[in-house]
Length: 170
Image 1 (cartoon, rainbow, N blue to C red):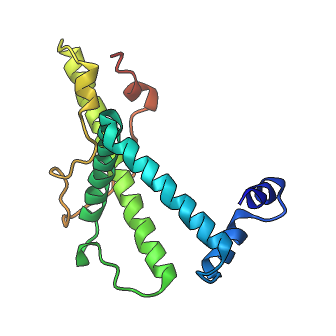
Image 2 (cartoon, one colour):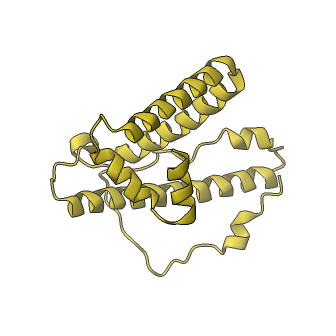
């Protein structure tokens, strides 16, 4: 195993080639078995750390919740089929995923701009804005979106300059 690590670090073999070979090798291969056992040891060590460290569990749970929130938000924009891609063409699948991500990111951006403007308005009105409260705000809002509504673009209206929007001063 040490020789494999040295071969990768010196560039004699790429990690992708090694992974491909290990994936195709027979389960009887000694190198395959050694890496499999190393993986089991690392997983066991991680699980023991996870069980014994409440802070680590909390951090992982928070990250998982963020990812699941985004996935639910993104899935909400998949019109029809509840996010199931019914096409077997890999290029079409990739397009569907990328378009959905683009729409979700555009809405997140607009939500962030809207929330920033609201917070600035509240600050101008004299409300105290606690940074801890801002941390709890999520840009994954959908209640205000007409999912199947009519939309039009007015190309004569320009958005505010970014420097007008950014400064919250909190």
